[in-house]
Image (cartoon, rainbow, N blue to C red; front, side, top):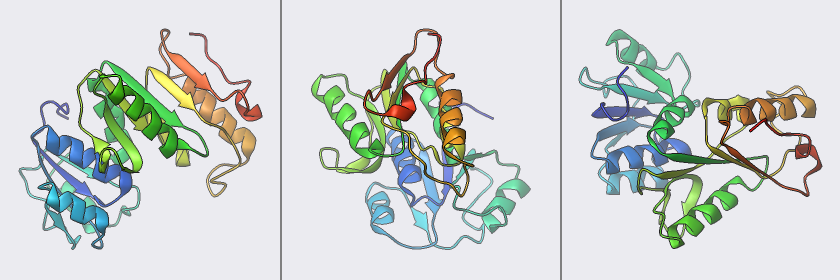
Length: 232
């Protein structure tokens, strides 16, 4: 598959999702041709339309054309959706949203990911605004619309990217950041995780992705995070 710097046309299936729509906006801001689909209209799909991103509200596969370089699929789009079949029939490379973000952040000098059971969006927004006010011009993906950006994404420079990282189904393991901010760990998403121990073990695997020069920020008031660390 081509790198994100090389691809020109990207199709998002399930583009109205909070993470999908953020990545779509960033790629559009880079001058790529971005299109997508969703099952229903929403405030987010309207925001995308106003930013020059066409959205189809039928997912019969007809919106995916042979000139598309990459199809990115939301985890909410089932494998038997016609758009999966169309992309496969045309031989178009596909990625999950979380894998796509993992590839995208490789193009930045410093990737900062914020994760934990609670407070991710608030913490991501705060860190992003601190970096903006410091003149560091970060690129941002966050799970809410930030007042200062008027969006859930901010297209900045290529030095810093700040990303809200989801722990559901171990999605954050797709990311290999330079810095991790861990807000807290509690029992959550027990439709996937066996128990709290399983959650803690998964966060340790995520932390192990840090390079030797990486930085881990932990909440000193969170007892479940205290034994987590790495050999950096």
